Length: 211
Ligand code: B1M
Figure 1 (cartoon, protein in one colour):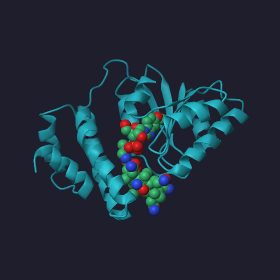
Figure 2: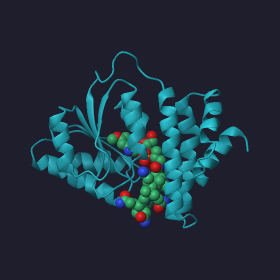
Figure 3: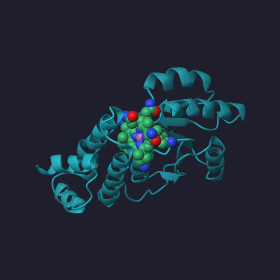
Figure 4: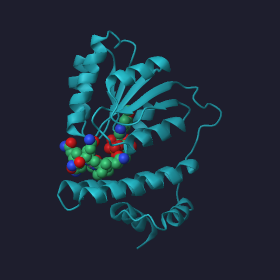
């Protein structure tokens, strides 16, 4: 297979052996972020489709996710970095919400914001709103970012916003939400209506950065 098809295939097949050599070759042809966006993410999309249609079992999805993570980690040092303003643009507390283990997208958001001068407090997965708010307070964050890929995570996000309202903290914390189960309309119409502060939807990590 040609290089980029081979790389995409590696994600789908969960084939780690020889990954670094292929990535080195790819880096000679395009920037690291383009490799992630044009190639690796397509592989993950296929994995999702195969899993969703019952053609792929969970352990294989996990293997694909491991290769995806290894590839992103390998590429990270090659990603463009805004020099000289590490963490000075503002602070975001970032978490995958309670009950959800998906973290590849959230970690991409972390990398892209960190490389662009923001300070990111990445709490990890399955984070209850109390932990998110504690961290936001402790780090004097400017924004809270929540990620979640399960349909049930969209419900958790709604409950989280209600909890922030109830604690009277919504004016203090603008919130960015992202993850495959969300839609812009759900966030910017339905959730925005119930949240007393500002809540925005980020379709991908770059929209997160822009916001
Ligand atoms: Co799961 N999973 N999974 N999974 N998994 C999905 C989400 C699913 C859609 C697959 C499917 O059925 N087609 C489905 C959800 C269905 C639903 O809710 N209706 C599903 C399921 C069912 C499950 C389990 C329940 C399976 C089971 O146990 N029977 C289980 C859930 C466990 C739990 O959370 N409690 C499960 C487990 C897993 C693995 C552990 C095997 C693995 C995750 C490994 C890991 O993350 N460490 C996994 C994977 C890999 C997937 C798919 C295949 C790929 C997800 C991914 O990494 N995509 C996924 C299928 C899919 O999404 N189509 C699927 C690549 C990633 C870069 O995209 O995270 O969307 P994404 O991030 C994007 C944007 O959304 C955005 O930026 C990123 C790109 O720039 N973004 C943000 C995300 N967060 C953001 C935050 C922001 C801004 C932007 O600001 C705060």
